[in-house]
Image 1 (cartoon, rainbow over the protein chains, first blue to last red):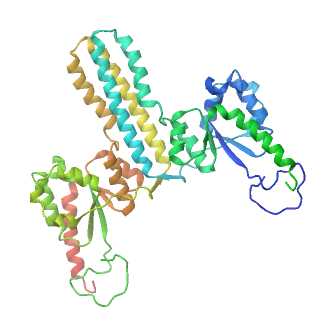
Image 2: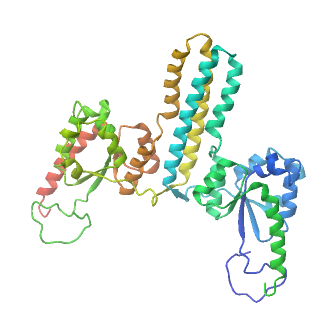
Image 3: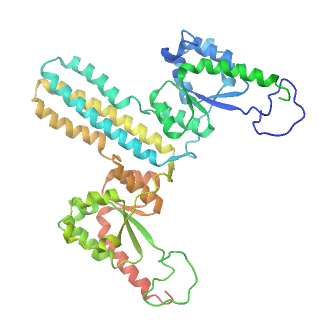
Length: 221
Length: 221
């Protein structure tokens, strides 16, 4: 279905009205895997994905996308036998055109400064751990060190190529990005990418079903 | 002086021939400060800068640039009284247009993956330091930790906004970047920015003087 506005006379009721442009949505695995945001859709990742597919099938005004790298992550969490082949039609798998896309150069400053601060913080955490070695056991200190170090150097940043895939795909498609990852949301803000509070994902789908029904019924629609 | 090619009849011998387009060169402080590359120009940063100015004044075919942030760094190393006002005419201070420039998005993958690997390496170094605390004194371990950690997380990367200034300015001006910083050279490679082995900087200036003389003498030049 084309989303280009054009005049046409054959508007049968089962066709989407021209006035409703397709909205593209890029989904992260966290929506199905992270228990804090998944619960409204299901008790397990598989259930959450099934509910999503059931709802998404009723929304002709939205197009859902996921980078293959993220889809690969999702497959680790779900019972593949229970997910119908519809998935492949409803949830489009597309990598971003990474060699064509450009990003604003001032982001390099932010990435570099952010990394620099985190790296310094990581060193301070490590020094503290060494100093505490006189009082506690090495294994205990190391557990604590790992947690604090990862918190300081990983949280709130994009730290994998899968994260970059999600951002760039949303940028390329001018899509709405839905993720529960704070680092991704932080970067979506910088790049001007639309994003949604992830716990509102189901409400968004329900709203889209109602909207699609309304548009389908509208006179002249 | 314009570098646009155009027809003109008033070619007096002291004017630059039209056929020699201006080459822009972006300079890092390391050329004057780093003893390994500075020595061909002078024994101190001030001497090196004086020699550079003496040579650069004889090269009308090159335009020299430095971002103000880098110039600010250089001022910490030189005796300001000994540097003539010519400096400000010969070495142009210009920040990059950081909000207009774009960089290829695939670089985000490289930055993110590179940082991820370094961060993991940093954690392994920290763990090793904690484990060695049973055998050595804390202060001794921390000295060693700092050195290894900085080596792993800082070397060969761009890790300051001054570094980004240099890269973006070279990109914006389509200039030749001259620096002794391996991280900068590594990123110049990725971005398609021309760069020069820093220890050849003086040779490059001497060659440019000869070239400018030759072009100035050429019949019809």
